[in-house]
Image (cartoon, rainbow, N blue to C red; front, side, top):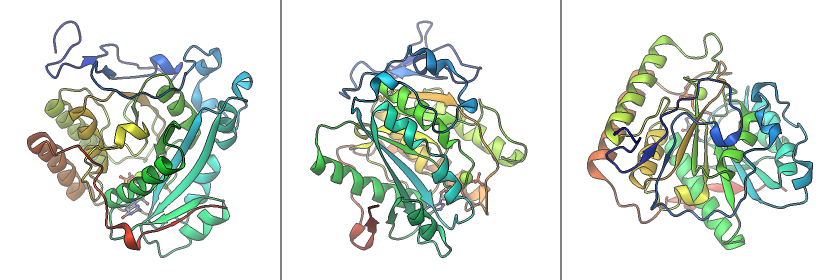
Length: 331
Ligand SMILES: Nc1nc2c(ncn2[C@@H]2O[C@H](COP(=O)(O)OP(=O)(O)OP(=O)(O)O)[C@@H](O)[C@H]2O)c(=O)[nH]1
Ligand SMILES: [Mg+2]
């Protein structure tokens, strides 16, 4: 990277790290890069200087009324994606924390999709009781699940309204991520980000939320990602991501399991998509973890390396054998 903040991939990198709570959307980033040639033509007009946006988000109630003047504007759709495998203890709380009303006031239609890994507990029942739509994946793995669900939802949205803006926010269904922050993620996407990562490393973390080994692993993998793609990132393994539909369309994602986030990051870097990283709170998960730390770490490192070396074709979003997958939309 040279002194103008331009790295050798031709990306402009913000050299001003943020070490304070998330504030106004426009400056709430740790690493931002911008590409002159990426063309995502979202028509949303974010108000990044809204004085309300300077409130500390951790103190923001989920349904805080905001932007009353904009309430009448229909800006587009926010789709919340919750990958879930046997999360009966957490899924209800996670859905309840989604700031549906605040998003509606911001001008968005909100849909919540629980992307289920064929749970054998009450996960799906609770999700339906809460009014969420459900999608049952075929096969196993978080990566497979999200790619199948995205494939389905992107095709659906194109059929419904090819011109509508659509933002996705994905977060784990285990209660560890701050669903209330979805409004902030959306504001950042409105103000020009194509992909937003919530960094657990830069925000407050509850005691015991991340083991020392996982913390070390996350740091090492983020370093590796930065090294391989020449783009600074502090938490490439985070489970909370926001993205515009165009940012994943044609992204050539191939991950099957917990390498999904590495795959998303690599795909964005390859296509010089604007990524912003924001600090988020991270809490202890409810219920049993599904990943095996060391093995998962190796799979993620392998995914980063493979994407860097192979540079897979990005012309289309890889379709899944989704014939047996079952979407069920909430009434
Ligand atoms: N659909 C689906 N979801 C999965 C699968 N495996 C895990 N998940 C979900 O993916 C999210 C991440 O899994 P976790 O076990 O929490 O993994 P993690 O967050 O990396 O690890 P912890 O920090 O220990 O929680 C959770 O909401 C899981 O329920 C799967 O095969 N299919
Ligand atoms: Mg988790």
